[in-house]
Length: 90
Image 1: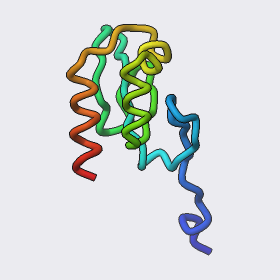
Image 2 (image 1 turned 60 degrees about the vertical axis):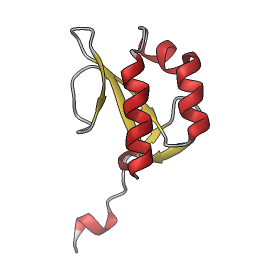
Image 3 (image 1 turned 90 degrees about the vertical axis):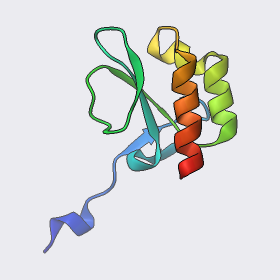
Image 4 (image 1 turned 180 degrees about the vertical axis):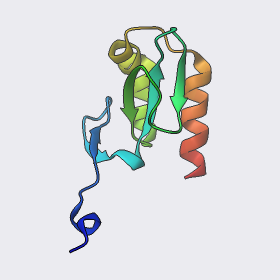
């Protein structure tokens, strides 16, 4: 029997809407140990991570402080710009 067919996709929760999604469908924002904050395209970067779905309302909530609260630091505006541009590509 092929074990890959029975394997479930990992689930993660959007920090804004609190809905669970497949990990691959979310964007991961990371605060690295050196303090940098960036969008992690690989999903494997070291540091504290937070997941955001592509819903414009969720991105707006994150910009209003949800992401800052979750990561415990200020979020550069470039991170929100990157989230929006990636969301528009999908």
